Length: 142
Image 1 (spheres, rainbow, N blue to C red):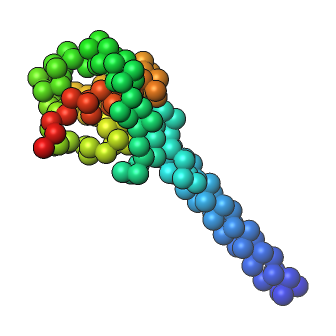
Image 2 (cartoon, one colour; image 1 turned 180 degrees about the vertical axis):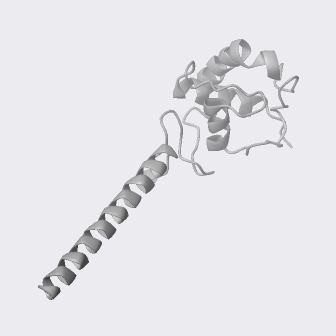
């Protein structure tokens, strides 16, 4: 009888421990998914972080022209002609949140605290890439 009680206690303790581990794993997966890090994926409307992501419209004249039109209607109020205004200068190589294509995409898509609005609800991914292509076309070349 005593051995049975010890065995039951051990089984119950192991079951409780397994339950806590399972709960912790599920919470970790949920947090990673919410952060856009689960299995190398990203949150909806974003691109993978890193300098290796390249703009699919880079250097394409038609895309640059379309990006110019989008910039004029959505961005010029703060960034003027790209040289800055209420928003920072976009023609130099100084970028507050990083200047890689992926980082600029994230800034446009998700916005930034302190003034930069999120455009992912209004601009498609292609439109954001075209705006980036336009910005690159007006950037100061050393």
